[in-house]
Every structure is written in C-alpha cells, then in structure tokens.
Length: 129
Image 1 (cartoon, rainbow, N blue to C red):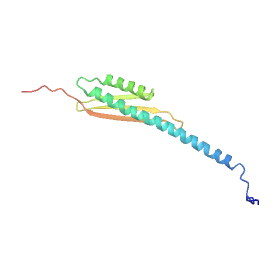
Image 2 (image 1 turned 180 degrees about the vertical axis):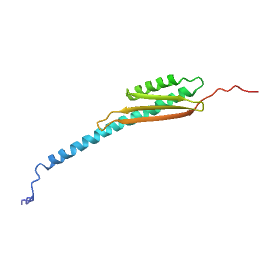
Image 3 (image 1 turned 90 degrees about the vertical axis):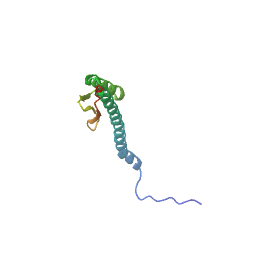
Image 4 (image 1 turned 180 degrees about the horizontal axis):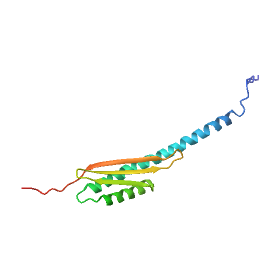
C-alpha cells in the first residue's frame, strides 16, 4: 500500500532562500551592535578605573594634577586601546575631581564615554597643643 502524496497549494520553492536573505542582514546588524556594545562597556570600565586612579593620585598631600592626568591617559590607552582621551583633574581645597572622556567610533555614529570621580582632598594640619 502506498501513502498518498500531499497536495501543495502553492509553490514553496525558494522560501528558505528568501527567509535567509531577509534575516541575514538583521543578524549581521545585531552582531555588529553587540560587538560595539562590548567595546563601549570596555571603554566605560577603563574610564572609571582611570578616573579613580587620577583622583586618588591628585587628592593626596602634595598631589600633582598634571601627573594624575598623565597617569589616567596612560591607563585608558593600556586598558581600552582608545587614543583620543581627554582627562581633566581639578584639585580644590575641599574636593578633588577627575573626569575622563573618550569617544568610540561605530558605524552607527560616535559613542561618547565619560566618567567623573570625586574624592575629598587630603590636607595636612599640624597638631596644636
């Protein structure tokens, strides 16, 4: 006994090719977005680390904001690989602030990464009897 063949209403020939042709660009865009998302996260963590390092270096007694700024730039270059880094270190009487800013180029446009760290400035005060 033979099984009857199922009748097809329309032709399904080439349906898989069409689906792949429609889905492939979307999957590629998602993959690219995922890769640049990880690049942004890496730069964000590096900016956080560099800002904290700069503020800790500048806030101590006799701390130098210029040295702290150079250390933060070096940290960003080592940890994230970006070259266009701006670091601003402000050592005030009460607080020390370090802001690290960089930009990551993507096919979707530039992504800016910025992190600011703030800590109290250490002061030396002589003991009074």
